[in-house]
Length: 315
Image (cartoon, rainbow, N blue to C red; front, side, top):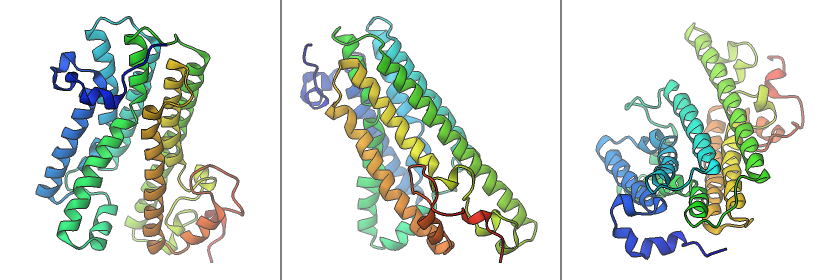
């Protein structure tokens, strides 16, 4: 097979200064991610609300994905089932996650992810906070959201160069896995939504948390999928992007594609860190959560060591 230009090569080629219609979609997507990073940093400084990246989390990967489809169409490339399916899957993912974020009030500009205020109390120096906001909250996360779609570059280059494989069994497997993990994430989010809605409905009726019936009396969800994983939705989210990576394997026949896999690896590491930080906050609110941590796997669904907490009778 002919050698494809790497993303690094594209950045330093003359094409990096070309018009959008002549630019490789991987490159135009990268510049777009940097623009998003700049906009969200400025918005955070102005509004003192640092959840602007969160509001774009489920939207920008869809834009990067559709950018490849648009470029292929504009340049008259032959229709490719793999590229179309990949874009369709990511679009469905984005629509579902956007809706889930919307119903929780995420697009209310007065709302902010509860973790950012906690971090601001830890990073009290204004200069250090703005550096953190600039490099991590804004730039790093936006570039990461771009990198998880780089498997599209491998699929696109295979079409553009006429050097790739047509739809294969691996593509079917990748599709099945992506849909399966998307369903897992959807069910987990719905179970979480149902639990929190009922818990707060009971609290607003005048009852204290400890007066609520099980499983609501411990404050957090530990039944359903959450009896086998403390964060089954996070596991589904990470895994579906690994499934997308498999499309790049099918496109060029290489099991290891460094530029296609880096985003998924970094996303997995991000969830490892953010999940632990989230649980540190949860433990401060609900000390019994430590017992839940000892019983149930953090991410990968597994048989709990003992009976789930919420199944126990109230004392």
